[in-house]
Image (cartoon, rainbow, N blue to C red; front, side, top):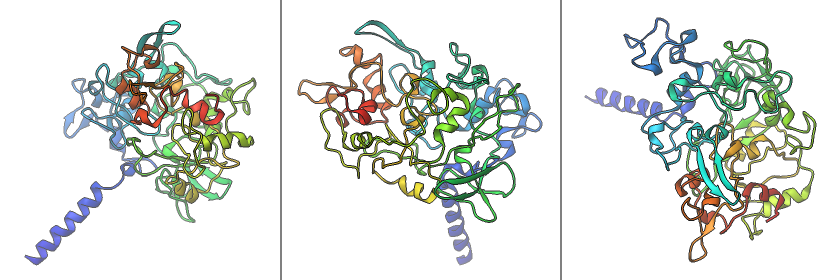
Length: 436
């Protein structure tokens, strides 16, 4: 009886460990279980995969879906979610009826915003915010995602302009997880390879390589010379993945505290694999700098002082906001980046504005994947007592931009309007430039 009790205790402990493992265990930084994405004989659990169950219909390359994006969403979307949930990066249509927002709050954003189109009458007349302008228009037919109907190639692309009708999750993420950090030497050196030392762990949460093992690239990002097998022509990447560390609990409400991803080396360079001419350092023209050190100390002082419209009482030790994240210099110091994920401190000399300072990687509640609204003069309005509140389409059409108060608050990751000033002006721009 004692032996049986001991066995049961051990079994419970094992189950607790399994169920409490963080959600990257399936990939573990590299290639996942083959049958998680492919079906060898067009069957699953002894049942044929047929059109009666489209999300499990065998697709090209024996995929468990119509296309690669659908295969990813087999795990990364789940109908019935009521809030942020682990690795989910898309909200099912049935879970976000008209007036209700997408639910996922990962740093990259929820692709569900692509299905939200807003119409309103603003200060300059009728206006529209089309769903497809809210993010990268991935193709995932089984889940209702289709190619961008307006933009045919990646904006700012160079000679090889990535075609919008081929954009899927695996355009950016290598599904087989070949890209790995084989070696690194802080603060500036890192070596990515696609073979050699086996991958021991995910590279998204602070793991580091050693003499025997590598760690996977952050979020399975693809690197030099990568392009999906399904894409003909040549669109091979120029740059390797960037270095970053995310907190394990990354998909959560930011009603009280911000979720901080610590971004390191080469974020903007990696985005330039498809958007090369978006940056002055990589193209030509008068555009916002990205990927270069902040040399203007006034920008740093502004960021650290700015709290909200009319309030410049901020401190450098607590000024960080995930609405305007910056890159920590061009560092490859992974342990230091991991420590930074729990810090509230603002930028320091040498830090860099990057693409993800203003944009989310997947989708947002606003046009051009911006982290905050740019289509109205004011983010918030005031109630009868003068307190800040989120606008609503009925009484504040220009400020609400067609979005309900619930949708607006969710677009700001559950932050209450009280986090901002009444009649708060565009937050992201003023955080660095203070023109309000």
